[in-house]
Amino acid sequence: MSQPGSSHTPMQSMYPGQQYSQPTMPPIQPIPPLNHQQPVAGPSQPPSQQPPPLRRNLNTANPVPPGDCPILIWMLALNREYTKEEFDQCYNVVKDCLPYVDSKTYDPTNASHLRHYLTHMLPLLMMRHRRIPRLKWRDLATPEGKHWIEQNTDDMNPEKALHSKIGYSLMWEASLCGMAMTQGRQERVTFIGLGIKHRAIEGKLTLEEYVQSLSHKLTDLEIRNITQDPAKENVLRRLSMVLACKTAYYNAIGSTPLDMRRMEFDIPNKRVNGDGKPLVGWEFRIFEVRLGVARRDPATKKEILVVEEYQCACAFYRGWKENSKFIFFKATKELEPWVQFINLDQMMKVLPKLTA
Image 1: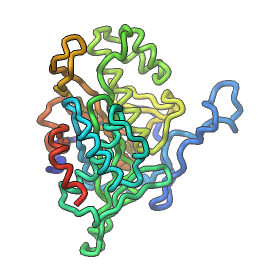
Image 2 (image 1 turned 60 degrees about the vertical axis):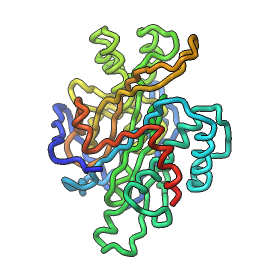
Image 3 (image 1 turned 90 degrees about the horizontal axis):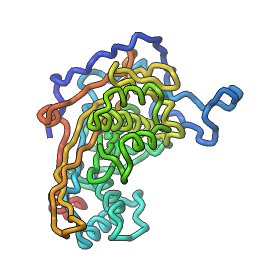
Image 4 (image 1 turned 60 degrees about the horizontal axis):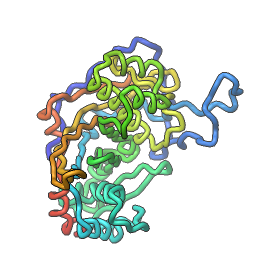
């Protein structure tokens, strides 16, 4: 799969607000995640009870050089219903090859378990695609649980070995499983995150009820931006975009959000704040995915083709000293250099080779 080229030029942030600088961190060791035992800061809370800022203690003195740490994404579409035999095959691969992945619960009727297994097999698929045997690499994690791959460097020169680490982020929702990855120095590659949001109303809610059900994750500004055009398609697109960006950021820093409103994405103006301050040095790639999924009609019991739409975002810390940048990809052709799509049939075909 080809690397992203220079044709994808990041859009410059238009935010005129105050900049801040971030202190440096020791190599490799990121700061601890948010203290989830502390309540969300409010007017009645003393300063000692306020949660730590969302701004990460990253090294802005050494930004990622141009062309370094290219981003690649793998997307796996569950394009049809699965069989018990296929579930068993995935379960056995995870149990035998990925001891760090939870495989204690065996339930072939639970589609969420299959998504869990398939998504965690994407690093296996990626390394197989690179023709690197399973015995030549190992999966490691930071204290925050951010995973990265260390390759056998016996046959590499020191410079190549230094830039051989692979950081990745996994995410799945509904019929789409994904992995965002990048390669470079270990202290850089782990700050990558993927966000996926199915662009559909859950249950039998109206559009207004659906937005209201998610309002606890949104700031007042975000709600205004989302609802300024009442057309259903536009509301869902903007809502899913904001939530995908927030999820991507939290996945990148390895933190479970206690209050997603601490992050504010003003996407029309291409700016993002954390705890009221501009977020510096991050890159957000935003794109859409449309899937054709074969589903069994509950009424007729016949197989029908259902079109599903997803809003996706990838967050990566590049260490720029200016405000974070947004890159929007609108055409499928723009995704070809850096997004790889496969479906369940293709995954099952290559499955026996993943353990080699």
